[in-house]
Image (cartoon, rainbow, N blue to C red):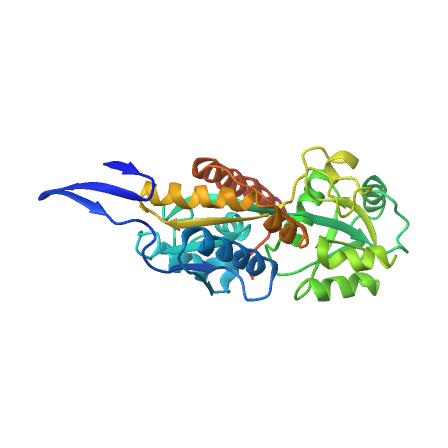
Length: 318
């Protein structure tokens, strides 16, 4: 099969058939989250940019539920023609550890196109807690095993996994208290119901600047411009600690390589666009890019990483 940018030539029993330029019609991008959340905001940013660059509509279809299973199953069963894409997130690499069986194969039913974003989190404590650093927090937790609580949302959510990885790497005993969403989680922290929590940066910033919460560390490998004086967990106490939440775009398995390459090249343009990067930064997110092969390797590494955490923590699906 010979391919050129924008079209492909296929050999058939009757001769050579030219496949028309892609895309010829609107593209449906199924997002794993409900409207209004951080993943939805990013999905719409990419859909808008892709629509302009491809000169064809890219329509967001929000299919929240099952931690991303509903959207993923729809895409896994869609025609591999490039007109149904999946805008997914970290849950894709966590669900295989939470469920013995999924309605799709997280590897073989998808064609990775590109990793598009990494979102930062921040480790927070109330000012009344007598700690000023991650090392202080670890020391306090070791002195009071099972006495400190951390708040997080649904089972397997980013904040839940971040705290469990901290617990595993620091060898401390802290207790998970579930809440419905970041807002309730932060309210509990502000009210002193819990002693620590990981949060998205945008949600936490107003409370940090007002002095209502103390930022101990960033969960990503590098410091961030929004909180330049706050160290990372990795540099402060636990080398290798990284709980960056990710977003990426995938297609059904067997999507033609020419289409995958075309979309991937457009994603790379978006990742370097100053306006797009600024909009994402406002959500505590860095736009990134890379090859489909790099994204496939990243997904496998993430699945292996979180499998260890889920097993060690004994996390079970709700």
